[in-house]
Image 1 (tube, rainbow, N blue to C red):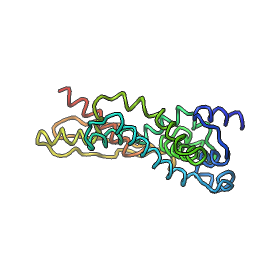
Image 2 (tube, rainbow, N blue to C red):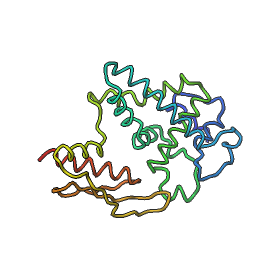
Image 3 (tube, helix red, strand yellow):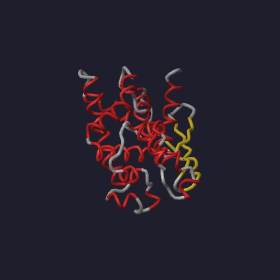
Length: 230
């Protein structure tokens, strides 16, 4: 679909010399190794592996430049916040990657085009394809353009909700928070988890997510927000 590819290239700020690389980055692993992925010598998972490292390096570079006096531990918190899967999925949505993905009918019907884990992987694969086709500087510009505003928005290093909740409990001499998985629903490739977290002496909070980790983080954030108001 040349028109659709042109729109995506415009969003990426890069016109591919090797369209096969972009095709490989958009060919979800549910399709197996065929088509553009085979011809280009790349595949979705290998590109995802490379893109993860490109994103991590550029975000680290961005943070050390913008927060020159900050300690390594605080930079690490900022980095973890920016490169978490949920944030990568949001960047994928901004670029319109969900609609552009080639995937099996089952994956698509199961909600794969808006699955945060799938979108995060696709974002990393596309960054790698840009890097391989246009060079590191082109990939760097893309990553900095997408991540820069969010990096600037937080004046203080963000807190990881589960860690912050644990520190809140320990600071009051309470037992560590307890997490329980209440339900796992949905298809194997598009699950939904319902998790509950409780702190001794306080009512629990529940949350849903596409992974246990996401659900736990959301529940921890909700409980911490309530506890800090009391």
